[in-house]
Image (cartoon, rainbow, N blue to C red; front, side):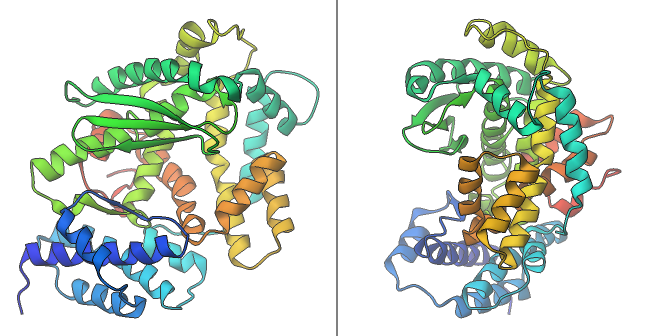
Length: 405
């Protein structure tokens, strides 16, 4: 029996909304960015929760007939398989975490050798200012030397974020056309411990949220703003809304299930965002000229770009820690692993451990390292800017991003 495309898209949206309701209800947090018809979300809000086993069956029914062109079938099927995997897990199926991650995220997940992190530590040792102490202690000192105190964030940080937004947006616009009239504001969230979050609210309005519960490292200003804003999450959401929803009518782009392959690419793009628009030492030079000197922070011989690249690579430690936690290793062992290899402080380790014990985040954490590594090879090409434009305007799967593609 033929299924109308609009009916299929409605049923896909309802499935994603219903699975997300279970995840939110289990205190694991929302796993859906939804901008679709309000009547569909209201329908799910008003009904009794659908049992997860039935939701897995609904996903199977959607996969049985996907009434679109072959390229769309491939993309949409990958999203539905991710939703199906989460529904099955909610119903009690316990796949090993690497298999679960492959089903949801579309990338192979394996244990990463510690030699990778040892090499990263050596690079960090060379990139940090000379001084006494371990690499971890010198990293902590470097962060502290460039940080705004927590009690000054609400007054002093938003104008600096605005300045960084203007520059990252200007540079992104040299790669891909951006609409006039876009508004990106900054909000400090008192007490929050996250570093940054970008929220495209639809149309031309977006917000970058900064956690106000800890000092903010100004050496990371462009790293955070580019990731959350341009050419990262906000730019991707804005441009895909215009290119895919408005121009092509692809309503599934308004139903973005986060434990799915598209978010591996999104987080990989976010971690590469600063480097895309500030190649080499350009970010450090811009920060020195426009921010750090005015804050009385003198050059110290450090290499910001190398430090940020190491920080991206060390997301692999989080991935290994997620595997340890999934094996049921004691909290102390997982915490020690994070502290040793990711060079986290005690407070940072405690927060990381809490994240890894949350079902949704334990899976999502793989998107950071594996997305970064995937794009690291794919973007190393003569047509780099064209590839960035594709990341910002096309629906791509990790399997599309081969170095020669």
